Length: 139
Image 1 (cartoon, rainbow, N blue to C red):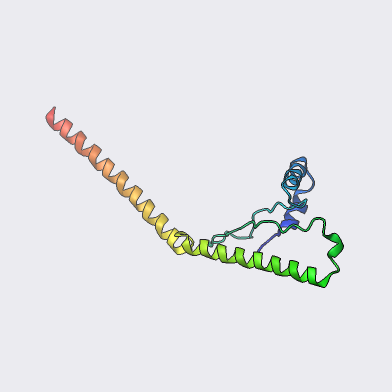
Image 2 (cartoon, rainbow, N blue to C red):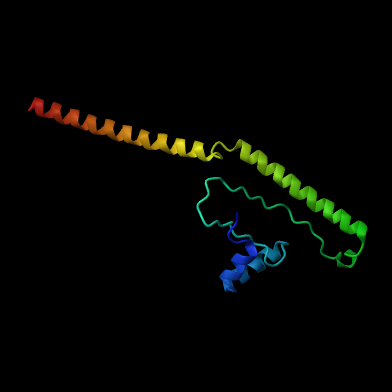
């Protein structure tokens, strides 16, 4: 569904001072270089909402010598998997609690809002016209 992923967007933007500064700031906060994430893009406007969660980093700095230890790798794998699954569950909860997650509901709400604005404008015009008629009757 995605037209471009994060790495492709970065390569299209190319090197820039702003991106370099962003990388430095993120690295100072403990993120690896290049950790920023552009918003997903699509060739066509999509009706559904996109929910994004940035989880806490799983820090492995200083443990590079353990990458060949199967038990360590299994532990890291399980920690990453649990973190991702917990994030997915959290986003599912956010989506289910979002009153505007449904495209149909958003369209209906927008239509009702537009009609209501039209009714208010029509009421204001009628009120103004009635005042104008009363003023001319009194004169």
